[in-house]
Amino acid sequence: MKIYVDAMGGDNAPQAIVEGALEALRKNASLEVTLGGPVSEVEPLLKEAGDVRGRITLDDAPEIITNHEHPAMAIRTKKDSAIVKGMLAVRSGACDGFVSAGSTGAVLLGGMLRLGRIPGIDRPALAPLLPNGKGHFLLIDCGANVDCQPAYLVQFGLMGEAYMRGVMGMKNPRVGLINIGAEAEKGNALVKETYPLMEKAPYRFVGNVEAREITGDQADVLVADGFSGNLVLKFMEGVAGTLMGIIKKEMMADLRGKIGGLIAKPAFRRVKKVMDYTEVGGAPLLGVRGAVVKAHGSSNAHAFACAIGQCVKMVDGGVVKIIEEGVGKMPEA
Image 1 (tube, one colour):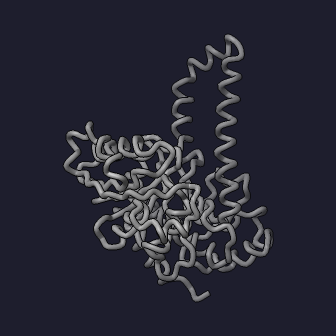
Image 2 (tube, rainbow, N blue to C red):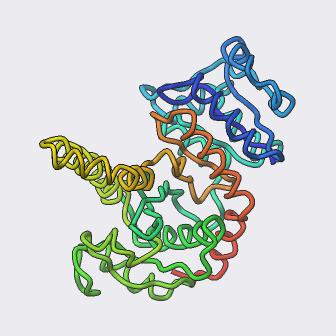
Image 3 (cartoon, rainbow, N blue to C red):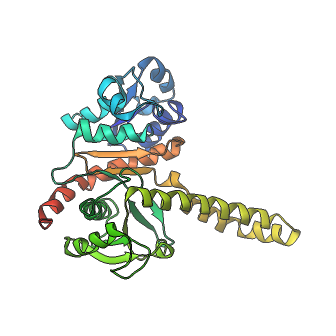
């Protein structure tokens, strides 16, 4: 298993990226990593690689794509960037997967233009795993496609279901459509047109899911256009942070709270771990012809190690193949 890593992507690159790669290598003895970036900057960070140095390859990629550049132009002009070279390495079979915490737009466009879409998939989508109290659900799309057509949402359900089967080991994942009401006739024109198409799709469609039920374990895959999905994602992140802050403030408000907080500290630590995105790693880019994971831009070393592990699971789970097989079963739209 060889994963290509964009060593220069993210707020904490390259230090955190290299440390994350070392952590991933030490967890998985069959893993090899290619670090893409300026060798002059990456190589000095490998002094502590020691036992895993033999499983690391350096690919000199002196050009860096930043978040301030136009993604399409950057992908076309910066051919010596890690994002472009990594995608081409996966396409050629030299590497099995690609992980980056860099520009989301560049990763999305790189996947489409340099790796290529799975035949039958109109729009690749980003799909993070989010906690629901009993485990995780997959939200697809979370921002890659702001304006969508009904066929796109149907395909999002197919791709999300494939991921939950291949990576999370679910036998028959439930697919729901985020809407303002549970009834089939509710919603805007997009979801109204999508509903009957999803009923005919080759997966377990459980109908509409209201916003208040998103974290209520109503579905394993929740489908939305990128605009709505991004609102859900950012709102959940904000509420989680606010609630943790309120709880901490009230616990420290008086002596009784401090004593109770001390007793409950192990439980709060477990809750924090469940809500922590760093334990998941990143969002898979589904719909392209290869395993691609977009890690959070602020990823620390542990978060990036988890993102690499997530990419390994995508390859092992045959997610791309499952999506390809699912496309073949889709009814003619």
